[in-house]
Image 1 (cartoon, rainbow, N blue to C red):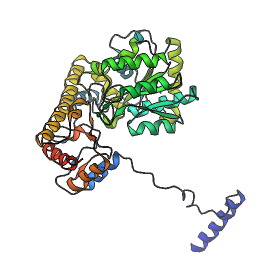
Image 2 (image 1 turned 90 degrees about the vertical axis):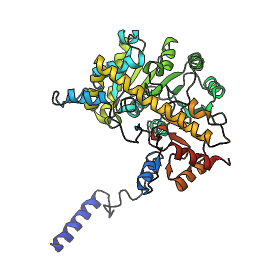
Image 3 (image 1 turned 180 degrees about the horizontal axis):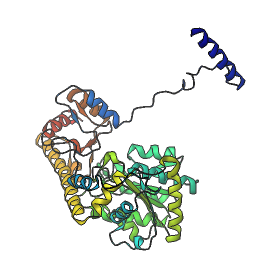
Image 4 (image 1 turned 135 degrees about the vertical axis):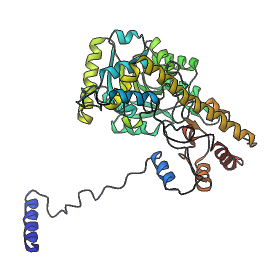
Length: 427
């Protein structure tokens, strides 16, 4: 057998040589591949899980937790699953996904009685949550406006940069966060919109900006809309937190409605990860508002063509959950109640964290904790202070000081506040 193996190897080597492969070792094809850097967010969870400390706290995860720190499945989701179970087949969805899910999703973003929906001016497909919607749009931008660039806020969700980079769309940044005030750099933002070349693309967070939790006011949104229109820019909204930010989906869509009122043709990425807790189902929607129905048909066909070589067609289960909930008045009412409970808990934890810090006599202002909105609080802590929290107090978060308020509970907020106070009091 050993002799036969040697002969077989020699025959293989001769065959490879005849094709110009030479004596290359079959194990050397990937010898130049280095390990990828760890994701800054997912790496936090890995470190947390490896820590044996009983007092450890994870405020890095971007997923909702109840006041006991446990994952939550909404009752409206459980009921939808009960109705779905055993009643439907597992056939492929079309490339564009579930039309019922898409129709209900568009109502949330554009309005229940939107003329744009009635006039069939919106090209929309089911996407693999918000990430997939952004990626399909980035590829669409590259394919049909190859000379364009995307303006991305500083800071933003880190994956935004990865998405447009891998779609090979040139990126530029615009000012957004003002570190000194822990608020919006509105003057810088407006200046960058004005100075951008006409016809640029701007990525906007519709509500609950990630990672800062800093949103423009309604009046500021109106000024942003006016300036973007004056410059002929295209606004692409990433709306990952509709309903989860304030507890009211209509209020959280206000920025989009302002742009629609002003006559923009916009794009929107929507996700049900946060507001329905469907993190692992990867269900979302990409939509582009067009000139007319004819253009919408053409754009949708191209969005579907982009999806085809990526994943062919989207998964069915999450889409069924969403369409079942939003298509049933009682289930939708229950969802609206439950999403408000989630939002209110986050808002309550913001108040509790601020109050605990102020009671400790912190010399710093912590108003920004309650001024910001959504899942994340941009604390203003330095990477060195975050390292101290981890090393001395077993508290885990990303090194930019972003606190996931979902990880804050009535049980750990005093401990968290005390630790923050200790590492910041001499700042």
